[in-house]
Length: 376
Image (tube, rainbow, N blue to C red; front, side, top):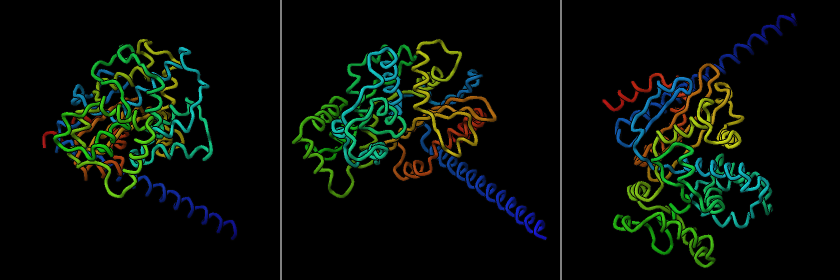
């Protein structure tokens, strides 16, 4: 009798486990379908404001491109370029792998209420009283946590950079050099000028933003005034359309085709060796996702870099090597997304679901989906 009871209990657990797994799969599938519907609705509404590229690495002739040569604001996707330059300097011996960073100086690059807590999350892995971290850890934190303070510190550490030389190595020609990310909210609003308006936009520039960041980092009085200014309640940003205009006019832009060239160079074994294997391996490691159940169940390897900024910019570059398919690289750049749609897309990780859909399907169906959306 006990054996029968145990058998029935075991059978029930199997059924329950299978039902739970099935319910989870159905929930994930529903989330993907919902996200893709949101994506294609946005593409349909503003077909000129999205660029998409997808390439099966083993069959590059099957690549799909849409608006791939149109420049789009990059947001944090530009951190990929900063990391590659850092890895190149380490590889050539210009920067030591064991170089350390004074945390007190790093914290001076952190502008409150401007990066959705990314820098704070990065620093929570360390004891509160830590005084130094390795520059290599900072570089990886820039990629995996997307700390703007980390990327801005690293840019200053790397200066001057011969971006033209690096871009030749990467075979890219329509992408702006990276700049500090913290300069963007300072351009949009600071205690000296207040929130930017439409008539302010012609006078704004990357150079102006970099000057403001230098003041924030180096001028103690200016810094204290700025922190006090941002401590109040309410939005720290101008109206949505002004944010979008500043992102378009005064931040680094790049093309989908350029970033597919970078990913192909990093991940394809057939590419000419313009970067050392050490640089490629370090960059792939910085991009790679580890310990994510969704990814572990579907991929032997997956790496990506997300970028987004208030004002409607949403970008993603990704590599996926599915367990049941061939490796794929992809890039998706959106700009000028309406505020409500942007918030929904970001919360749903819709752009991430699109990357998985492209990767797991080997780019099949993408052309038809774009054509259907644009033709509505």
